[in-house]
Image (cartoon, rainbow, N blue to C red; front, top):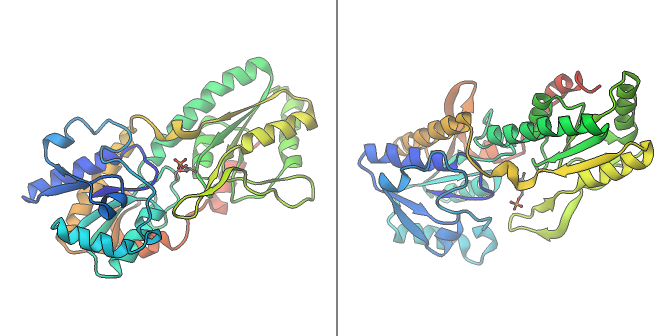
Amino acid sequence: MLTGGGDCPGLNAVIRAIVRKSLSYGWECVGIENGWKGLVDIYTRPLDMNSVSGILQKGGTILGTSRTNPYKIEGGEQKVIENAKKLGLDALIAIGGEDTLGVANKLAKTGFKVVGVPKTIDNDLNGTDYTFGFDTAVNIAMDAIDRIHTTAESHHRAMIIEVMGRHAGWIAMHAGIAGGADLILIPEKEIRIDDVIKVMNDREKRGRTFSIIVVAEGAKISESDQKASEMILQDEKLDAFGHVRLGGIANLLAEIIEKKTGVETRATILGHIQRGGSPTAYDRVLGSRFGVHAVEMVKEGKFGRMAALKGTEIIDIPIQDAVESLKTVGDDFYDVARTFFR
Ligand code: F6P
C-alpha cells in the first residue's frame, strides 16, 4: 500500500485496517514509502501487526507521502510496473485523492493490479459521499470559528477565516454552517464585495456589531460590476500534478472590507492546522471501513476500482468515475447555507 498527495487525518486508520484484514487472510503486507516516489525509487518497509499498533489515533501517515507523479518522470510508468514486479507485489492499494488515484487509474488501464481508497480533506472526489479527513478538517475549522466569534464580538470587528479546499467549497460550507458564520464564500459561487458589505450593514442595523465571514482559499471576488479576481496564489510554482498553491484571499478581502466600511477587520488563515493532528471518530471509522473494504476488493480481484461511501454503505466504483471531474458544492447545498447569511 502507499499513501500519496497531501496528508490527511485517518490515513493511519486505513493502513492499520488494511494490515489487520490482510493478515487475517494470511497475506504479507508491504508499505511503500512516500507515495509513488517509493515505487519509482523502491523505498519500502514490511508492515506487520506490531508496526500498525498504536497508530489509529495519530495524524499524518506512518508511510510518509509525496506529490510525486510517475507520469512526469521519464519512464516513470515502466519503473513503477517493473519495481512492483521486483518487489513481488500481487496487488497495490493506493490511498489518495484525485492525483494519486489519477495515477492509479492510468496504471490500472495497463493491467496493473491496483485498488483505490479515497482520501482528502477537501471532500472533492466524485463517487463517494465523503472522504476521510474531511470531518476532522471541518471540526478543526469549526472550533476556530467558535473561538474567533468571541473575540469578534468583544472588539466589534469583521473577522475573515480562510479555510482550505482548493477548487471546492466543502470545508467552508460545512465549517461555516456548523460555526454559525454570517457569510460563506466559496469558489463555486460568484462573490460581489457589495453583497458582503450588504450583509454586514444589515447586521449592524440589527445591532450586531461584528461579522464572521468564512472564505474558501479558492474563492474569487469581484467589485460591483467588474470581472471576478483571479484566485489568490501563494506563488507561481506548480506541483507535479499542475496544481498552484492557493492562499491569501482572506487578507485581500479584509483590506477591501476595511477600506469600504471603516469596520476594523482581521484575517485568519487556518492553513495546515486543518490537516494535522488526531482524526475524529468519524474519520477513524470511515478510514477503517475503507481499509477493510479495499482488502476485500483485492481478494475479489476488483482492480481499477475505488472504495466509496454511498449513504451508510461502503461500495466500490471504477476509479475513473472518481477522478474524471471534481465534486463541487451544488445549488441545493448552497441554498441551505444561504438561509443563514444575515
Ligand atoms: O488537497 C488538500 C490540500 O490541503 C488543499 O486543501 C490545499 O490547497 C493543498 O492541499 C495544500 O497543499 P500543500 O500541503 O502542498 O501546501
